[in-house]
Image 1: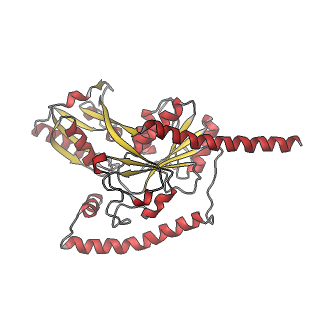
Image 2: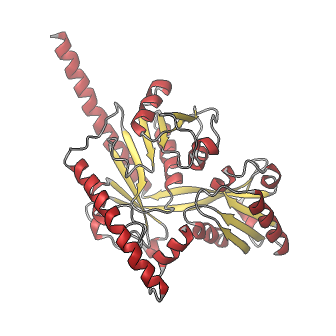
Image 3: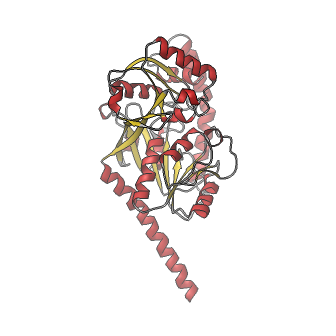
Length: 374
């Protein structure tokens, strides 16, 4: 279903049956759009209240479904905050995870406490990448945030995929959008990839356009929002079975069997090609796909029949392959990082907003102390 929807969203000139399907999908988009508009209006007018935590909250999110680089951005942001002496924690909804407690501790910053089946693959990937930074999941991020503050004494929280989670007040909203097709086909779900109408961009404080700068399309809705460029860059190749790090040059000229179950598998394929790999076979799976024995056997067979010397997938997919240790010992993971430019301005804007919030809170606390003394 997801693959078929992607095809329909990306078709420039629909013909035949696709036209009828598009009409049906646009009809279904109307009640969805009405519900989203009503919810946003209730929040905008203060009828639906936002819960507030006693530390700054930074959200990293999307206006569309699909991969724009949220996970590497969350990892970069958490590392940046920690380097500046803050004590961050990452809060995720834990999509696909079985753990349903109000606050599930995926990592205490030192140890991984939940696997991907309980926590979801993205929180585990984030936890593996961040040392000294707790990662928690929970449907209500306010409760997960309170738990993080009480258990780990953190003083700043990062919401992974939090733009639509309006029930929690945030001090800074970072919105990621694709450089080439920021609004997809311009339609709301299920007729297109938009979770919300384009005008909801106004809630963002920072816009991060990810992808090739040469493909950057103008976005009039974001005229008053600071815009930065984000580029997903391959960093290194990891031997999945041992964790051994190999240089990216290892891929150059090699015949590769590749597969990916992520939001944008084609971007992964393009990364491999850009690194000089000859991708002789490629399999795309749905995002968060739970691999089974049949899939593993098919991938092995295809790699052998196509003469591949390496089998390569993403780090996120590697998380979901822990039940196949023999296969993991055969494969390699491409580690990706986010690079944001101009970096100094991006960092400065984040800390100026966090700093102004801290200053207000300090003044408020000082005022309380004075009243107590009186």
